[in-house]
Length: 249
Image 1 (cartoon, rainbow, N blue to C red):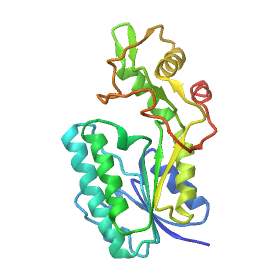
Image 2: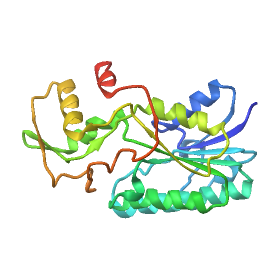
Image 3: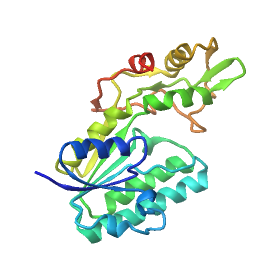
């Protein structure tokens, strides 16, 4: 059965893949982005993008990690989109979030994602929050952020990278399913230490840096403990491994 689905953040890394998958499956997709005249921060064009929408897929991401700006972005977009979705009578709001985000003591970006989740859950619109682990595509940036001189100083914690394509596939599937009215966790096939992740990335880059576990190291300024970034209960596991992704580049 064909459904009318609006994707916000439709030109981003995940959003573009979700749009392609849903379109290929025969769904009637509205790809909402600034390029299409939709500004989720100000609310301009949001109601029009939701005309006749049965499902919303929200994969918007803050353009900055700066505390105040990121918090303001998620607060504004969540308020505008949930209010518009309720006005439009949307039957399912699918939100992409982060595994463990509600347990992190982070800056504005992390707090903003929690605000976003809470706004969706309290909106009165049936919803599913899909929390994913860190993307394969981000592991080079993550590793680079941990390099100090000739060392990579990594947190004493686990990470469970997932391919963005696997995240997009689950979001596209979830959009056509009944709302869970709750949270589902989605992760890569296996947890690994930050040290092992950094070693894989550095080897793939041909860099000979020493990897050092540093209890003071953070994840982009957010303190993390052993299980901060990995699912603590049941989670759907995607099939593609980081090592295979790095080797195919």
